[in-house]
Length: 123
Image (cartoon, rainbow, N blue to C red; front, side):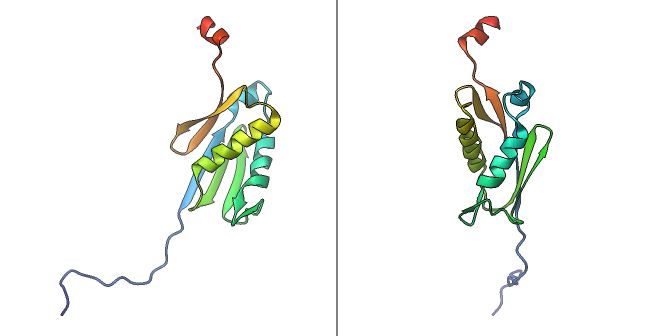
């Protein structure tokens, strides 16, 4: 007995989900504090694919447009991992006390300065 309106599932191809993330370094790059090129290279060296760092293959692509770094990856890739690596880079450069990584959208981060008491007095 078959049920009307019920279709059998066929073994079709599964679509690979592509995720796009970005890190905007414009404010820090304007002041010559950070180089987007260096952060791009750091991400290429440190992003792990299948447990191996620097093994990007065709699953992850990292490219740069002026001061914005774009990461395109296949499905199992967390946005928070990009934040973790960005913070790790800032720590290695000794900039963690001056810059922070802030989410600007669902798929993007931005490097911003910490607000200090001096900045608040000027405003």
